[in-house]
Image (tube, rainbow, N blue to C red):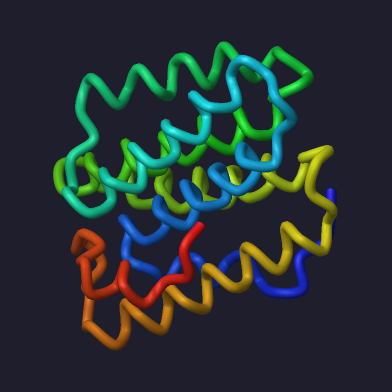
Length: 168
């Protein structure tokens, strides 16, 4: 696993939904790099669903299915890194959703976002430098945009913030 040239603890400063979005964007990048395997399209689409949750603030039963299926796919060596990254991105979004009702969910959100990046770093299709650049770039963009639009710890990611991010 690559060593990150930045402190993953910097993720803690993002709003919770920003942390989940960072994880979803990393999962999407790894899934997009997959060769033509049956689960690749589903993994890409599912990362988009999680990203949408970060704007709506809702991670319901339908979205929890994504986490269950991603967990099942983690055993397939062809897609293990992408499935792991998606699994933890979904877990981060689930925790962000529950953070209003359950105090420990904040730490779970942050830990899962970090685990998503670490799972993405196991990708065979992307090298360590690419993973580091993607993660650092998204972290910088999200930190700047969330600060610019004064998003708080529990705020969803607004269209203004999304508009500042480079497309994935």
